[in-house]
Length: 346
Image 1 (cartoon, rainbow, N blue to C red):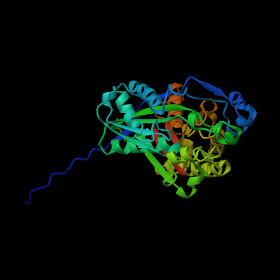
Image 2 (image 1 turned 180 degrees about the horizontal axis):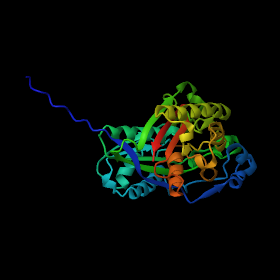
Image 3 (image 1 turned 30 degrees about the horizontal axis):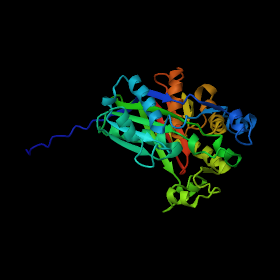
Image 4 (image 1 turned 120 degrees about the horizontal axis):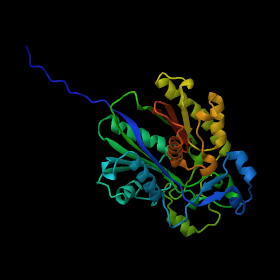
């Protein structure tokens, strides 16, 4: 008989959301407030986006990372952990405090954590879904036990608050959301699957070309001092984005359900990225979901990009709308184009 080679015992883990947190600035900006800065109205904004108000930071007092820290503290506490229980940080944003470094390291510093790794995700409206998927894989591989995932955005300081920029500027708000993803031995619970996609040929349809357009840095923009240069403001081809969003949302939700041999009737809660209430309503109608099966809060916060899903998820759980055993679907679409979904058994 030959000498037997011992089998390597491979651990299989799932990851589950153990704690949630969110933070939004105190300053409320209503549609009427915006109508004093640009040619718009409450009726015009609500009809097109469903938004009634949004939150803006007070410049100089709050940043993307400081809001992320507040949301993270809440999530860590709700998970029954301390900052030093966190093994890794994933921070999703399009509006970092600095051009570099990214805000992940600011969280590590401000929470006085161990010297854990931190990665920054630049996938805009899909950033949190991408970040959650990344954290999920770290945990499922056995590499980490507790991963902090944050989505945080400061839009208000980078918007064109004039009639010229109203189509975009009325939509966005500031805020942060966070979750702690932790190891779960029960493979029937937690994140069941995640699905990510991109289509770069439409990149310019929703974009900011500055400060680095090829080799053109912000220093050149300052040097040129051109008051008509709008390259540093966000541009959005609204109708084109809407058209693509409703298609990709539908596809990626179905993809997640099919992967897990589930149907639309199994959905207990759908939390879409809060891009536009009209998109969410279109998807809700298409899938024949009731108001209790879809959570929206864009009316009060606007589109907070990478923060929108974790804020909405934290609120939904806080209000008792997500219960143990529920099937929860997260879905996002945004600049890139990028889109994705995460299927969770709560």
